[in-house]
Image (cartoon, rainbow, N blue to C red; front, side, top):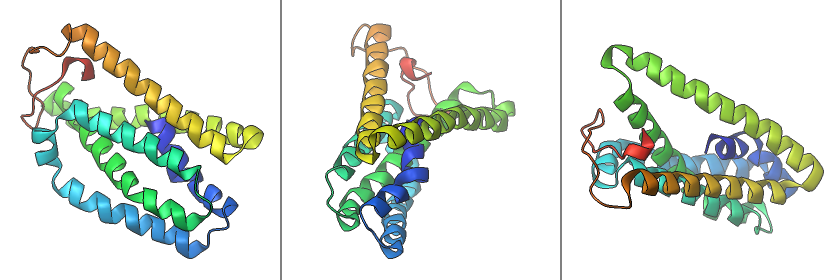
Length: 190
């Protein structure tokens, strides 16, 4: 997901400019995403308890893919604003789930180191995403870049889901392990 997220976080305003969006529309897009992120982060514990880490990762990946494919059909920047609430959902679900996973597999005395490692892993994805995204944009254009990003994220979801199914023998009852928050751990996530 880091590969895809960096395209939105670092390169999306270039796409906005290609669609002749004003700086006002670019700024408004950030406001829209934050308005949706804040309430979700405020309820992150409840999201973990009710939805679970695995489903939060699925939600974030699906919202990302739908959003960036939607961008490619927008005739101008104003239409892109309709997809921006999904960025809030993507970001809040992804951050909540990934931080929780890292907290669950890191000893309490190394919690900060675990989160730093998570940052390093994300940075590798960010680097690959900006470099690869820039190359795709230069050769094939913005729309192709975002459609390919949706395909990459969707493929990652499929691989994760296949791993989950094969490690559990399906969706039967899995061995109980608890996250740092007390939510149940899905084995394929850790």
